[in-house]
Each structure stands twice: as structure tokens, then as C-alpha cells.
Figure 1 (tube, rainbow, N blue to C red):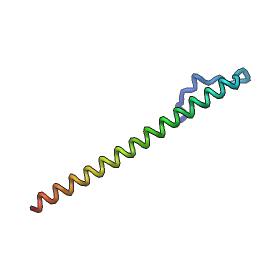
Figure 2: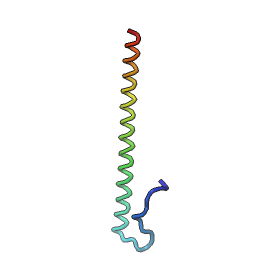
Figure 3: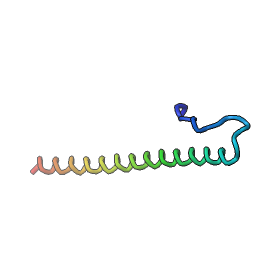
Length: 65
């Protein structure tokens, strides 16, 4: 997270309330998008593992027949 881009951030007393609100809103949206991508990836990996498990079972059954 230390590599986060803070180019839209203005440090110091010259930042207005609107700029602070906008900066925090942008950060919140980025975090939400990041968490959504991670959740989607976890679901994809779970589906892939389930499919591979089913394929393994089918191969084992066909080899025993």
C-alpha cells in the first residue's frame, strides 16, 4: 500500500473541505474496487477447484471401469 499514488493529494492547510472530501471519496472507491476484485478472484478460484475436483473424479471413475 505504500506504493499508492497520492498525486491527487494536497498536503497542507490549503486543502479545502471539498478537496478533502473528494480525496477521501476517491480513496474509498479505490479500496472498494480492490476488495471487489479480490472477492471475484476468490470466487473464480473456488469454481476452478470445484471443476478440477469433478474432473479428477470422472477420470478416476473412467479408469476403474
